[in-house]
Image 1 (cartoon, rainbow, N blue to C red):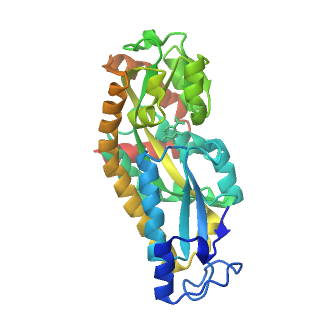
Image 2: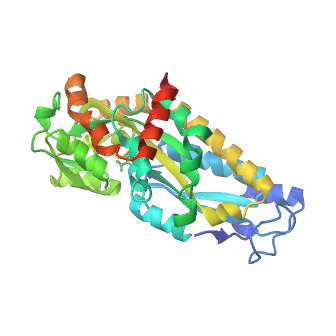
Image 3: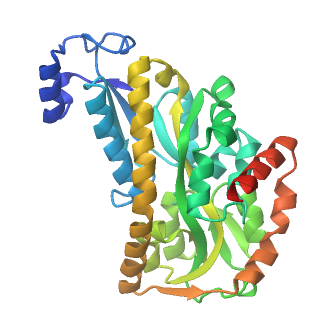
Length: 345
Ligand code: GCU
């Protein structure tokens, strides 16, 4: 929920800055800072995140908040709630639409229910590399309309995309060098048809589950494995209970920062520009951090007893390529897919 924050609750630096800017703090219950200046109440946006404080998304989004506070002279602030403290991602989508929270990071499959076009971002082989993915997710011509397409029906604006890096399978008992090694194994997936089918196509048994439940799911044996990037594997400590990380790299996943549309429309033009600039910097910092965070995650997980194994990549690609035909079924999905492929050339 967006809260009108009294000056007393803002950080000392912000207070000092506001004092310098000559802003008053008495209008805590006044309307939003629609005129971009003067004696208006600061607004603090709640941002929901299911990652830990060590994750690049938390680090970059915290910096986003700091930038925004400074650039808007304290009129707009962001408070990041990490570690799934505001629930799971399926709830974030609902809460952001309803305005209960203002901002959240959700994985692409969470937006599939709102628009089938988002399926394209979760299919195998769609992105050549993280650089390719980041270019696409910030390309106004390719994603501009899609990012605003949920505003009318859902009151959600997609601010932009962040990489999840390549996702791979990890398991409790043995590495999965070929899809046959996964036969019959219960593998946790995100709550989405495309991820369910992906695991089915590998001959394993998909178990949809919220991210925050995966550790105990692995520990208790409700699931035999999961699939994710190295950073989440490490920061969520999944390596402790599933020490075999098999480099299937079956897709490069995408996260999206979503916002309540009404909240954004309350910003003055000047403050919205600051928000967009802050996001651009966040996006860049996150992409830069990703590589070193991945290296650190591998090192940390190995030190904790995990083994990283290369797999028969061709066998995985062969098993998963049919998903492209299965899930790209509409003209708009096809044109999005084509635009993504064209940008790789
Ligand atoms: C990644 C991704 C999250 C997602 C998670 C999952 O960590 O960044 O947004 O929730 O995978 O598998 O659920």
